[in-house]
Image (cartoon, rainbow, N blue to C red; front, top):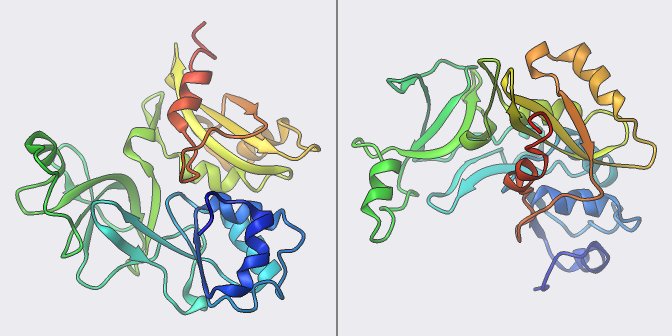
Length: 277
């Protein structure tokens, strides 16, 4: 057990364990370490990522460096594990969190009537199953908001299923950006814009805008040779106009919580006056 993640301390210890679990930030920092080689991970049976979306670019770079395809899955405190990519490496698809685990029921709903949506449509994720907690201790108001009468739990996450049942997370409901009346899901943009040369990490947020209600903003950490205009070039080529970032900011590092998740609320506070001052 280590007090915090430090790639320089972790890499020499990888030969002593068979399973490594971490958040995406851990994997980007491992890739930055020159000692992260196939020989260093020879004893590892399984690499697992969770708690935040893993960029496909990191997935692919990690596989090229180590020969391992990171296993992504989806869970939360209230339900422990919900979905997982297969144990078989060939069945792991970057950008997805796999299939509901045995006994777990997952539905994607939308609209005022919260009707179940067809494959491919983004909506709110609701779940039920034996892994789900009984409720929040002594918080009846929270239970009334989070649980339906049929036992399904409102996760607060958005996503969609493909025609095989595989789940992709689009983001947190509270992170949804509504720009000019159109819904923008940050995860979709983050996965695409991470392909820009020099980008090491990216967070897409919505900030107040006098005309559009909210404007899409890209915040990145990047290598020295990164050119911010390249974000706009790729966005114009690959994204509908309402999804294109209206501003790009570069930070030396992201604010993160103890688990390594990017604190988007802090970014929204920091850049919230971009278009309204």
